[in-house]
Amino acid sequence: MSVVKGAESLGVSARMRPRLSLTAGAGTEQLFRDYSSRAESLAAQGAQVVVLPEKLGVTVDPDTTTTDAILQSLADKTGATIIAGVVRVAAPLKYNEARIYAPRAALRSYDKHHMLPPFESDLEPGTTRTLLPQPAGAWGVAICKDMDFTDLSRQYGKDGAGLMLVPAWDFFVDRTWHGHEAIMRGVESGFVGIHGHAEFFRQHDDLRSLRSKRFSSTAIVAK
Image 1: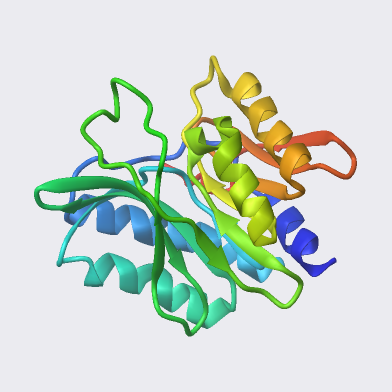
Image 2 (image 1 turned 180 degrees about the vertical axis):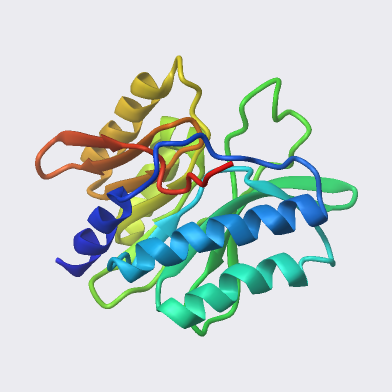
């Protein structure tokens, strides 16, 4: 199945901690360039989709053109879809957002529904789902803690999502537990999950074999 082939390609990575930026401007732009280099390497090895971590950087409306162009141009060049997590500031609100760069397509996004208190109590929850139609079946998008909740996953399952793309930032102490929660969502709702983690951890959940394959994060870049 082509979707799973592309997902498996994401297992190629470096064993180094990723850098994240919680400030807008040049820092976030440089991170996008660094991650773009790593994503291009994965795409060259056959990856059809690359999932980067949650809250990779900060973008401020309406000045998102430069950061968006970095990953959109990569998607157009390689034919791979790139999912990147950011904090998007649309004053007076802030969102934990996944920005979706598909080849030769308009930018799409998904806003996280379920925040992690108290760390994300200042962020505005999302209210809609995002589906990406594909020849082999739809892909859905969620973010990290969203996978702890059955209702959202079941809605995606009813929507026909066969693959969930999930930027995440699991902590070292909870990564196994949280990963198992995500596996159960796939079992319950009939999809495979690809998680791009920020803490040395990447997971491919395959409900057909009920196994979890763990690798270093696909989004990791050298310092």
